[in-house]
Image: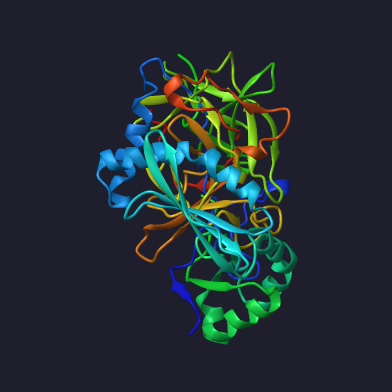
Amino acid sequence: MASVTFDPPPFLLCVSNGLRTAWSVFSRSGWGALLLALLLVSISPAAAQVQSSVDPMAHDAAAVAERLDLTPVEALRHLRLQAASVAETDAIADRYADRLAGIAIEHRPDFRIIVRLTGTDPVPDRSVDLGGKRVAIVFQTGAATTRTGLVQAIASYQSTIRDSLLAPPGLGVDMRTGELVAVVSRRDIEREGADALRARLAALTRVPVRLRVVDQPVLDLGSIAGGTRMTGTRPGDAHRYLCTAGFAVTDGVRSALATAAHCPDTLTVRDPAGQNVDLPFVGQWGWGNQDVQINLTPGTLTPEFFVDTARTISRPVTGARGRAGLRAGDVVCHRGERTGYSCSVIELTDFAPAGDLCGGACLPTWTTVAGPSCKGGDSGGPVFLGTTAYGLLKGGSYRADGSCAFWFFMSTDYLPAPWRLLTAPATPSGGPALRGATTDGLYRTRAAIDDRK
């Protein structure tokens, strides 16, 4: 029996990138692709409360505790262990690079690290001391192929797989199981059968394949700071578009906000006095692994971003976490103008979204997160944990009841040179600054956007 997970079709926040036109229909699947604008760059109102170096992680722990089936105190311990274990798992990845199928974090029954390896040569389980807590590292051998092999399979066969199906699929790597996950439409399952389709894709790619079924389209979802509300119009279009700003960036001379490439070129924000401030367009990059736009801001930005729905709490950015070190099971949070603030766990670390959301097919460089909330208008918003930046939200998938099945983001690794994150000095309790992220998404309202602060 084929391994198949049934979900409603994913909705992606997308943009036509280089052409800067919103695609309303997937040309091959017939799914209506709404562009969701969720860009959040740092706009720090004078009245906003800036969280201390201790508050942010506890705030995120409280947000994700129920989802992890933990108490807030236990969740906070897990988030601190997650941050403290990065160097250890990076070293494991380097040591077993030729055998590594994946590294995953498990939160139940307790925090532990799972390492999947190819081959049958055993590696003894061990534990490591992380801040006075012994954390188990479990090695599981016998994986069919490496993570690199799974990513290469996506890159090599993505076009062939797309051409063979009624609807372009999403393709990603699940490091928890060592499988290539194909997010396909129910129509393709009904036409070919789950067992036959899974077997055909496995024979083609020569790697283990798991199917995930979807029924609906994927859609791209005084001072100024990241995570703020941005609006704009397009030439010849009377509608206003809503975006969320990501993080504050600099080229060493100028300050700017990063947001999704499919948002309008010229964007506007409200300053603390309630006045509209235009953000001049610098450029947009939106092919394959990028969906990011840079808009200048007047004066100098502070390296902060909004966290809460009401935009009354902001945090400093002290560093970034690069894509290479991400693990299935890691907790991340996001803030969007439509859905506010939420936290959840990473599912697929190397994901190529369905459709032509990246000026054509997307590369397997995006990361998916298991909900719990996403909606049009969140695109471009900041993805983070504590004061560490991870990336910019690009798109999401909804269930039939309208709830968020998963969302995905682009790493800050792909900010266009010479632009880089604005960062504040890390405090001793804030942990090391890591490297780091980007965004995406656009949503056209049917009526004029309410510009309430």
